[in-house]
Amino acid sequence: MYRLNKLGEKIDAYREAGIVLERAIREGEKLVKPGLPVLDLCEAVESRILNEGAQLAFPCNVSINEIAAHYTSPPEDATLIPEHAIVKIDAGAHVDGYIVDKAVSVATTQDLKDLVHVAERALKKALEAVKPGVRVSLIGETIESTIKSSGFRPIINLSGHQIKRYQLHAGKNIPNVNMRTLLSRVKPGEVYAIEPFVTDGVGVVVAAKDAYIYRVLEPSLLPKQLADLLKKYNSLPFTTRWIKGIDRLRLEKLLSYLTRKGILASYPVLVEKSHGMVAQFETTIIITEDSYLAF
Image 1 (tube, rainbow, N blue to C red):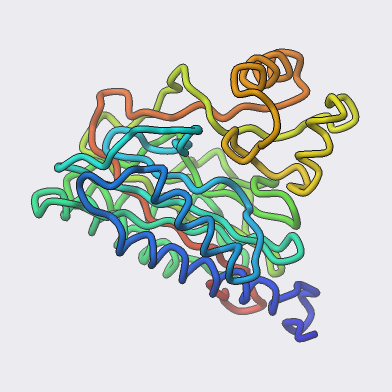
Image 2: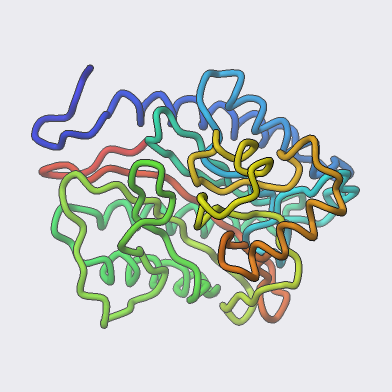
């Protein structure tokens, strides 16, 4: 198995996951159009990942307009893509626990494309700032200045994140603004998802009341039936529509109870506070001895 010199990371697994995820997201992009059921889009991306031989690192997020993150279709979701929309597709795939996390934004009308282009450019500029030993605050400063120079705002309370095997969020964060108090630096062998969020709103997200994504915190305390159903996800995030064989109302009550008890974590839908439009781009990288590799 090929390994990058001195890093001890399974680069071939990351590459395989990245190739599969790229194909799935591109398929999703082609499907985006007004009137498309969001459920169809989520399931198309997820099915492509599984059919290509990788596993799901988390439920496909399809977050539209002011919804910044964490929206995935619940069972029987009737939500349709509106005529005037920025559709953010954020998905993850893994091979043997080595996770790649990517996101793109698609504008359905010409007037929204500037916001999308700025998010894409912010990611490109952030990658230009990446090198071994660089402070994460400098990457954030690069993202912030790129976005603000274009007349928009970064979302200050969303960030990129370190990734470890079977851990989607692990350790360090990559801010989308210059947080001078963050003194941590990126190091060879570390894996990060970098994801600028751009808005024409105030630049802050708040949690909505709805949550469709969960993660197991205490597997030993799960009811046996649910533990058996969730075992295959290896404590990675899951969604209610993936769980078969339990009555829907009973399942919702059970998940709510387990979340209150701290056995599960829930991830509420995140909405831009002023209901501004939001665009996002994301990629996953591994820091090498002299640069980085993107997947």
